[in-house]
Amino acid sequence: MSVSASGSIHTVCKDAAGIAGNIFAFGLFVSPIPTFRRIIRNGSTEMFSGLPYIYALLNCLICLWYGTPLISPNNFMVLTVNSAGAVFQFVYLILFVTYAEKNRKLRMIGLLLAVLGLFAIIVFGSLQIADHLMRQMFVGFLSVASLISMFASPLFVIKLVIRTRSVEFMPFYLSLSTFLMSASFFVYGMLNFDVFVYVPNGIGTILGIVQLVLYFYYKGASVEESREPLIVSYA
View 1 (cartoon, one colour):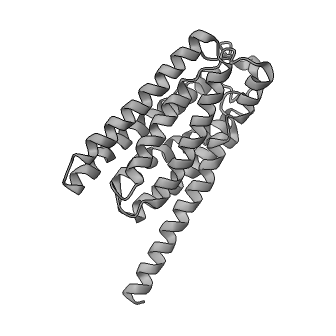
View 2: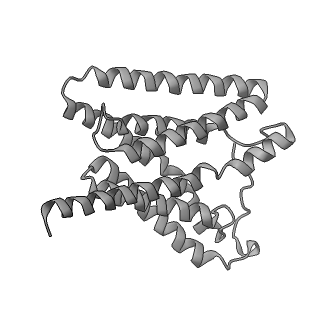
């Protein structure tokens, strides 16, 4: 096989993994829609928290910036998936602010402005780094830190499932989408030789596998078997 043919196959496989990751990520992006249907129907955010969408927006913005040609070459799939994610999170936040009580509304607006301000500082600061490799490493480490911090939620869910012996708060399709998206971008990062992509997504893949194993292990457990009452909502 010629070098050019081998390179072509490598590029096709990399792009296929990136496209698959974008498709599976869509399942994650639309997962809050039932929550916001309820918020709109009831005209209130009730006990729902807007913080997950704040964290998700910041994560998407940082990873979006990492995927631009100004920071890292040949990471178009990272750019597209995080651009879509940022749009979804921004829309969710606008809806949340619209239906939140006054105090929570002001708090969420303040947090949103803080996220946008922090992102602007990151963009401006990284552009001051003349050396392209150092710039990529700076934003890359920020994106990895941001992604790993997002794993706090799956870890909490895993702990809750083990404690309650119930998968009520770990929807199967959400766990499956998380696993498939992380696995796809792990492969994409490996084929793109990008440690800042494959390391955090490798961790996400492992957590996704753990969630799926726990789901099939505990899916037959009844609520009555839980040692402690399930948490209904989180502030």
